[in-house]
Image 1: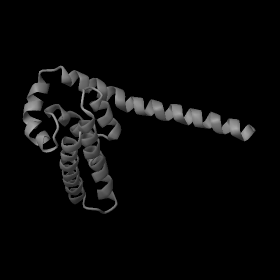
Image 2: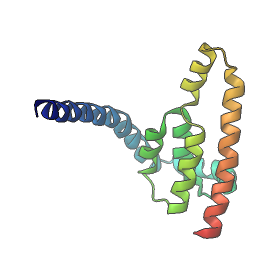
Image 3: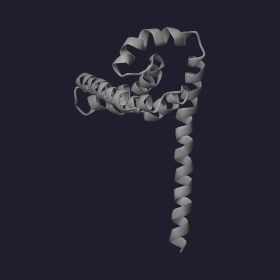
Image 4: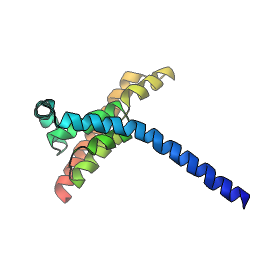
Length: 144
């Protein structure tokens, strides 16, 4: 019985520690995205990114979570998506793109350290993300 309570206690502390770590990532990104959303930069960013986002069947402001995810991780992308109102199909497309290509700077640095070609890895991951994004965006446009 003592082992059971120790497991519960350890799991609770580890869960709280992980939750706080995720909040340290997500809250600042969410704050920055909300500030960006209401800044004069957002219409300019939407206009520039709209042609590329059309490939994915997404609105122009979907570029914010996609770019955030490229440079941070999946949690940064989720935090960035929280600042906008996207459809279910758009959320799915954004998530799939970011699952294919997230944390590019960090992961290419790690790949370089272990002997992989970091440039080739980055190009491969971004190309795969674009192909998946086009396919999932098309599916979302057809079925949703």
